[in-house]
Length: 363
Ligand code: KG4
Ligand code: ZN
Picture 1: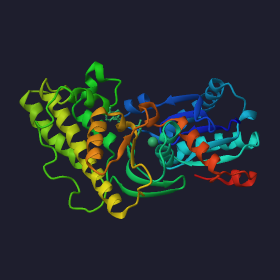
Picture 2: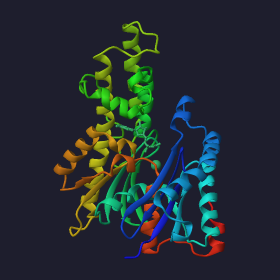
Picture 3: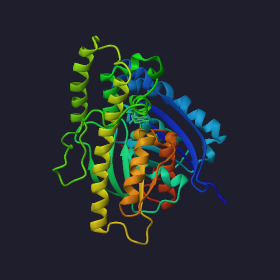
Picture 4: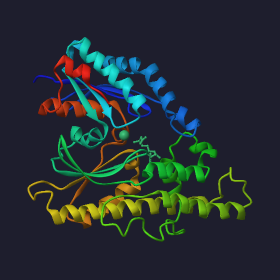
């Protein structure tokens, strides 16, 4: 047994993440993360210059913590993998500079990572998932159905024309003023809505009277209409209850709104995913020799209700199994970047060994 240690670095958005993964044993040796979520939440969204400064402040300690947790030295590593795209340019540069310097200083190969590729591959660290497989990525920043054909071959079947579903939840939670409730103050919009939806009636309000994009024979998504529909429902209800717009609606109205909104968002995801399954079936994109798998990842994939809906869809439609990485691997982190590097190192695809090539990498 000889280990293949890869250091992964992620700074594409608002999380500074690092991890050391052993490609040979598929294990995480150490990881560290610094999340900026609270800072940006207070300002009503991500501020790129602020994100860049926070990455700069924290990247050294995050990488050092991951190395210390793994109990390894730079001389033990076999490669450094770093997210180069897509994401916020100012944030990406911080990770690129740091990862590239580590590789050059210690004479290590450098592996440029595509953030979306990393999301789709993470599952293969913990489960046997063969190519080709279908991946549904649903988070605060991503919404995508992609056929993963190989480590370096992907076909996008559809993506969102406007908001991502996590964004729809976060904006919906704001419309409903969920943050004014102490128990939901520190929770993401999606998690708060899931919790409240459990005690509500999903059929109480109809937010999806005309199914978004149902006339389009593709697998794209649109969530901005649902968000507007929710606003139009909430405003008269707030007036009816004599609320000023900064307080939450009483029970059970609030719970019913959350359940109906979540229902509408997931109904749309299910419909578009269904289209993708039909498309893959008619084009025979997945050979019979391969076990058909739908991988679901991203922050929204931690929603239990969505997982159940997808399970049901997949059991009806052509014998797919649904596989979700554990929630902590679904969100942005250093492990997924290190694992993506490990996959590329093992397959020897896209590994930069030449000093000049490493110096030349750009975002
Ligand atoms: O992957 P992620 O951590 O990062 C970004 O995309 O930035 O995803 C965060 C998103 C947020 O929009 C949040 O509202 C959503 O995932 N989310 C959920 C749940 N937990 C987090 N959405 C639905 N149900 C949940 N339980
Ligand atoms: Zn991501």
